[in-house]
Length: 409
Image (cartoon, rainbow, N blue to C red; front, side):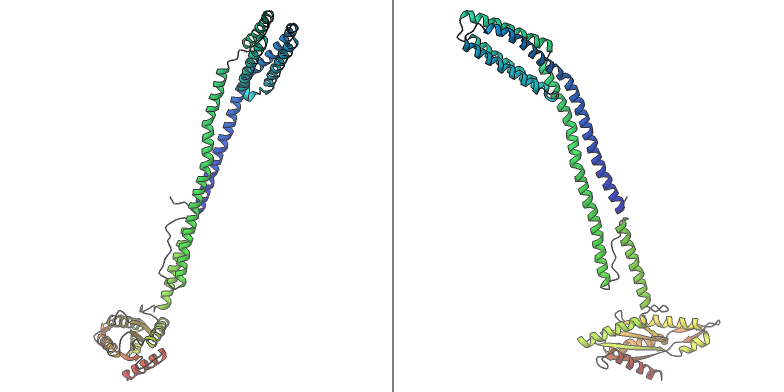
């Protein structure tokens, strides 16, 4: 079904609105889904945060114990151990601050790695270059630290690998919705662009065809028609334009045609005569004019009525048309007078046409009255030619009229 231009625009707007709505719904849904995932992850991320808090508390306790142990070390060793513990405390505190709910898993994993590294470094400082007694004391400190870490890990109950897998699965599941949202965002303007191009082409093609048809009409080509296959606004305008041309052509035909005989009327004949005489003067093309009058036509009208007179005019118009060439211009000049413009014909050829017309009329008869009385027809024909005998249209008409009346007398 063909949509109107207005309907097409409405459909285009609705499709674009639908695409944008789809994009909005997917975006909101994706945000809600991500929020749910993050909420779940935040609940699970409490464990690593608690673990870091427990670790910090236990380290504070162990710091007091270590203070008594390092009192037996040399000053250089004491400074080294204090530096290592200070660095360890700073790293743990920094990790605790960096553990936000959205990235708790990665932060805990980094904190754990940092603590293990610091513990190894601490043990290395305690054991390198130490006397046996000091290494034994350091071993006790290391054992206590390991016990603290074991308690921390046991109390925290952290399963880092499972948590990271959960986080990865949540992000992966969101990517499907992300892809759909991106696809909707890309398709919506593409569909809108295609619809806009389609609408513009429909409008411009229709207007271009209408413009070309109007230009042809202004040049006098009334037989052209605009394409009017569609049922949209442009198609309706084209159909109305064609109807207007039909009406204009019909009015033009009526204005140039004699209503009784169907021949050209006086006005149309003069247009042809002026055009052909100008061509004869310019190119020397021969042109002949036949002026024809029905003898005793008044008798038909006065005796038998105007209906019979009309029949006589129609009969004469038909036989004159039949005896002329296809290129000749035949017209009713007025009343009971007819004219023939023989274009490209010399006087001899035109005289032959006149003789055929007179003979045809003599062989015809009009049946009149209730008793079927038959009355003969007779015609008088005046002939002249250009440029041999006349040059202008007025001269042709005047000379042909004179010769016609000479024949009638």
